[in-house]
Length: 348
Image (cartoon, rainbow, N blue to C red; front, side, top):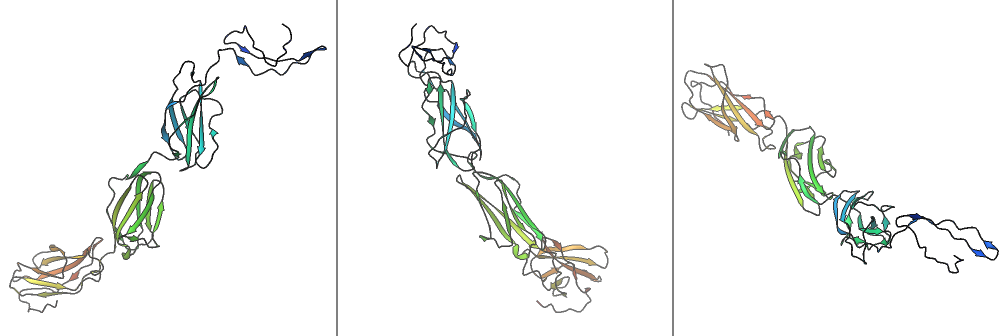
């Protein structure tokens, strides 16, 4: 064939599926010049139309830094949209106008995980099907996607959380609460409905919260409530903390026989009675015929108790203890009592 006068040429008689490279030389009356650099390899095949949009684009999983996608390949429409041979995934931060391609070369799978996202940042996401006829139209979501795990309503993970803690004054109070929530919730603590004092330290994470009082005092007693709240909902839990100490013994014990065969014990209050509403008293007794003490009364919230069935001819000994959540005080002992003893006056 003679020289080509145009700057384009249709090559015929090629074999389907074969790979070809081409180069061009300019020619004039003096002869042919040096050939051009060869073009990139091309495969002989019928021309294709770009594919359509991917179908059923969805999020299969997510975290604060990753987003996993899945989709179905586009349908072929003869003469309009040909088969997809690969896919590009693109993202765009919500504050930007520029799309970034996540994969430099087309992927053949219909799933992809985007990495390196910023926690709680918002992104537009889309997928583009491609073939050697070109790229199809992008398919995205109706709304932007936030980089976070799937939304989870706050839920406390420990089924048997303690609702009561008794702590000895001066000891450390430490309350650990584990929860599950997504996105990261707002966490607040109150004591008896009001904000915590400065000496109470709260440490939060995305999975739990810790309340810490290094050296407790009786004034730290109260109802502590944690509230965990996010965009999905909120949950609260309360724990009662009682800060107390070994109780001090009751005051002096006095005896009075108002009714024959009985004796009434009266005693002064323990110094802890006013500041410990759970403090109460226990009375033990022993007579001269026995060596062992037995409990005559317990859970007394007053300062008086009448012992019955007092037998003549025996001496009786009584002890009064103060009790609270920490245990027993040392006893306050009564004078020895016998029916022959002259009646005394009991001051209340």
